Length: 123
Image (cartoon, rainbow, N blue to C red; front, side, top):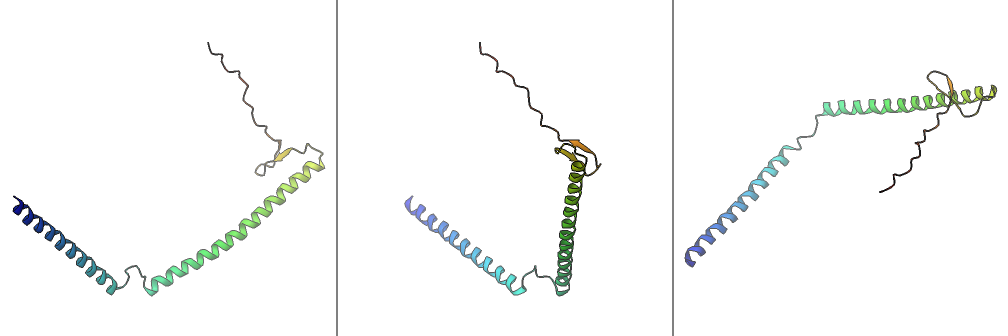
C-alpha cells in the first residue's frame, strides 16, 4: 500500500510542476507578443491631434464659463444691493427680502416651531 501511495504522490507532484511550468511559459510568451506589437491603446497621430483639439476647446470654454459666472455673480450682487437701497429709501423694515425673479419684497419667513408636547405618563 505504501509503495502505491508513494508512486502516485510522485506522479501527482510531477503533473503539478509540469502544469506550473507550462503556465509560466505561456504567460511569458504572450507578454512578449504584446510588447512587440506596441501598446494597443496608443492613438494614431491624427486621432491624437483630434483629441488635443477637443481638449483645447474644452479649456477655452471653461475659461469663458468662469468669466461669465463671475459677471453673473457681480450682477446678482448689484441687484441685491439695489434692493437693499430701495428698502432703505422707503424706510421699510430691514429684514425684508427681495425675490430677484419677481422683484417682490416680502418679510422673511420665520421657521415654524413645532408645538411643545409633554411626554405621556407611564402607567
